[in-house]
Length: 245
Image (cartoon, rainbow, N blue to C red; front, side, top):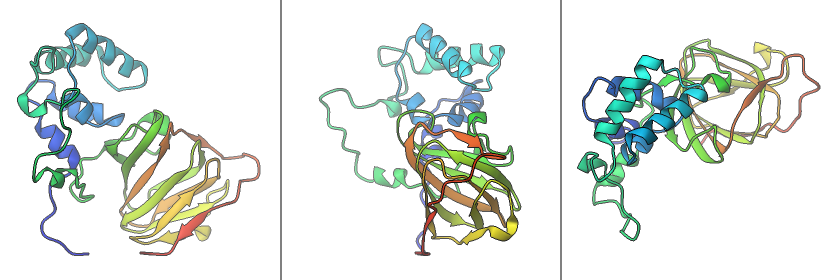
């Protein structure tokens, strides 16, 4: 469906709320690997709390060096500290206040796959380095709903694996191939053209490949983890594709 110029994606909206500073680029590049920037912008913590939180994130695999951690903590404490010290534009509704969005703000909830900001996917997902991710909502590593965009370059291959929970895949851009099994075989790939929807049950062994540069929407209820199925037992059946929409 054609439309007027697309609104800025949600990730860009929250990135714009971050004040300029030496650590902004680190926060934008590395904090989005596990959660949205909205969680940063709408937080209100003392420096010690930011320090503890950053160390927890590093412990979970965030690729932040000790020097970067110091800079990030100072930046967050200065801009998103207690007593309303964070930027006014980032203030979240207080308990009892209406959470209704101001008129016209709904457009900021629209995510355009062609404008979304992508970065490396967390190592815990086991995806190739060439696959980039943009979080739309939630946190795949935690309980609850999540939705992310995955961007795959042409010919990118995702080796046989299985997911810990049911996931749903929507092909948005390019041509994405998917097949069930424990051994990669390009001849078995089922083509998902833009608009196709695929439901993948938990523990179903499968593999995939982008025939050309592709963007897919992946969503479900976490926590999500991926495990290699190479050499595993007989794969579980149950692939449930839907026709192109």
